[in-house]
Length: 236
Figure 1 (tube, rainbow, N blue to C red):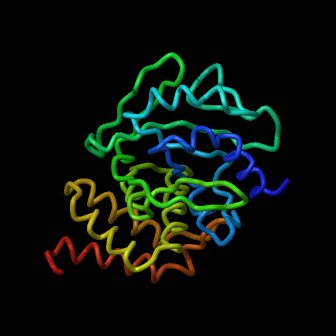
Figure 2 (figure 1 turned 90 degrees about the vertical axis):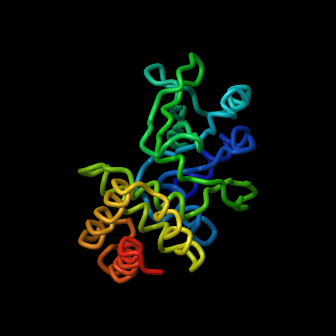
């Protein structure tokens, strides 16, 4: 079964939750969904991340029983595992726009505990796309790019985050790039440094199979880095 089919089948299984206002798909599958007809050629991970606003947590819990083909993991109830190989793993994470991007905390709950990741405070609701009869809520690209770039990880997970950011950059329009620059200007000096460091790393990365190619997109990455460096210097 093609990865695209598994991705769409998983989103179809999670459709009752995706109907809840404020819930959005985040993470590595967003670039796949933004490709024409959700082509899903960038197999960075084998799971789907859904960001749940903490203000909608109680409402989301009432929709969980309508999910079909997945069940909560016994070890971690926020991770739903597929009951057959046609679906991907489904991860629920928390998003709190009212918290500082460096403030990660646990929303404790017996049914649906959530790790509320601080950087997801940078992510805003975007448009819904229609694909294969599904209405899928996505984030605004700029916020998700910044979320990936402020996440200070190393090793394989760090590279994956940077390649997801690159995949998003490949779909951005000029207004999205301006939104990245504007969002960057609101960050603390420490987070700005992390963003610039991660863009520098991305500009030096080698190609990975089935992922966005940083080697042929270096000019795009360096161009954004130069824009952000100009913000540091106080240039318009």
